[in-house]
Length: 183
Image 1 (cartoon, rainbow, N blue to C red):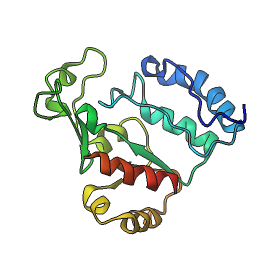
Image 2 (cartoon, helix red, strand yellow):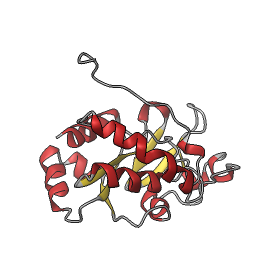
Image 3 (cartoon, helix red, strand yellow):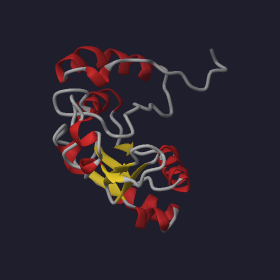
């Protein structure tokens, strides 16, 4: 399949305990790694729907890092076209496309989600409950300063395996984040 540029694997890790993730994800990640991909994208819900006990994004990062051993683990959460925004590390979401964005811990449905209620909108704090990795931030001020500022900030991060959260406010922001991840 030399003509194939991308492929996906459907899974249910969003509903798994960390122990179940430990049993399933390493083999999947090793199989992906065997294809020598430039990018592996582990899709998370745009409302960061996860907890330390169910669907732990932090645990998925830890397992993936054991296999891929990247210098940095980029994390882009949010989808401006869907009304999901990350600004200064805090996640906001609309409740329907016509509503104003709510900070996720004050969102009408996400704050009372039956399985993974969102009690903290700062994704660095929320994710730190799921992994012990350091979590850095490339914020809007850095993104607005351009590609050189983003690359400079990435080079300043010294801890191997650190998670790097990118703000995502606009579609242009997503383009800058994508370029930073690809480069």
